[in-house]
Image (cartoon, rainbow, N blue to C red; front, side):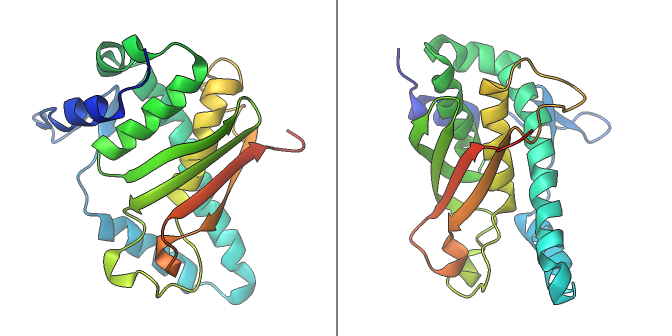
Length: 202
């Protein structure tokens, strides 16, 4: 059975997101926040734009790495959750299907309308995103630098969850794969494009 992307999106989009008495929302084995996207975008933009020019790349790496680490641990929570087992696991025939399933989850939760467009198992992944919260619609075509750190980081993490061995809570597998962004809605491109490859050394 092939991954039915639309069924996953429709099913997960209809989950009830009611917080508990402490205000926490737990779905898909992880804690979810409902902070507006401009909060996260504003944080990233301030961090990058207030840096001296010689530290901008270091700041961008920190944002990417935060997404990478979060994607690894959060991604594991998602693919081991009850919701995943009920909705997505029955559609999975091979490891590669897990990747397609994770991007359907991203779409269902409004993080990104991203899809796998090319995959060389255990080696390379190309993802295209046609909408994502890091590309503020008011700023399409106005950014001077690509800044979809979240999609880049979690794309590398998703490859690690599928191909870098068993999940390790200490995160030793993080860095097995690296992702780079080559196109961005925020820079006026028709989509964001992200290429994930194995790190030369790990």
